[in-house]
Image (cartoon, rainbow, N blue to C red; front, side):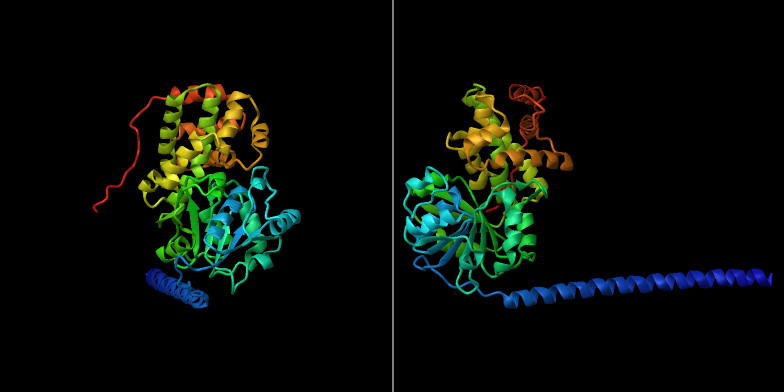
Length: 410
């Protein structure tokens, strides 16, 4: 009996001891979380004190603008900035290209580009240390293709000071990471605090050729802070280059990235001989699927997809014969070219091809119903013939249209 009592007491003591240890562990865990939060606050404060305040500027201010990438869109944006009187320097890879821009004021990168004379305030370099100066550079505009962006920025990230507003114009979903650039660039540039990352994303219906010729265009600029938006807007906005503002980074990114595959599909349909009614159906249903993916990826407001980066860019890219993505699809549908042959024929980056393939992976990941994107990805990977793709989509029983809208109380 005595032994049994001792056993019971030992068991009770052990139980009490376990309860005490649990409480202590919980207190330690809570304290650890508290310390981690305080550490984050300290780090954010330290970063904030290191960042220079954005200078006060107006429409007459002359800034130093750096453009990463000397392709079509990068050159067009350099022209936009130069017309505002800014000093512009383009970072390119090819020394001969840089020399031509500096001496002849001609960018020989594309045949059509060489027809335009660049102003004297547009220069070029192959050296990042010449392109970006911590004390002089006011804005960086990134116009390097999506798939090359992570590696490109990783190599030069140490030369990009965190206080300089960084405007990304690349459109697409990165294949290697299966992420939007808004989820890739912050990590690469070590700007992971959204409250002060100074990362902005410019998107909307805009062809480089028409920008070079100073046609009126409208785009949307998104970031997490309206102060940054207004700073870049003031720097670039003009009568012919209208910059609207948004804080829905993911929504704007999705619109710009996901319209490209739809444009490839539209081109295939036109190449196969289908008419305008079919084209309108593809664009409209494609818009529904874009919205579904955008919401899955964290779009702040589904109405963003009805704006410039959504319907605006979708209509231009899908309807115009100047569109690289639509042209690529047309060559596949009309000429029976392979994807690689069509891309080579276009001669410039066709982001819609890779974006369609990585989007199909995301469709499976999130369990979304996106028959147009799914069928297109199969076509581009040789799993489905172009003339069978529409049949596969049309064979599915249609339900409700599926658009999501948020009603404003204003």
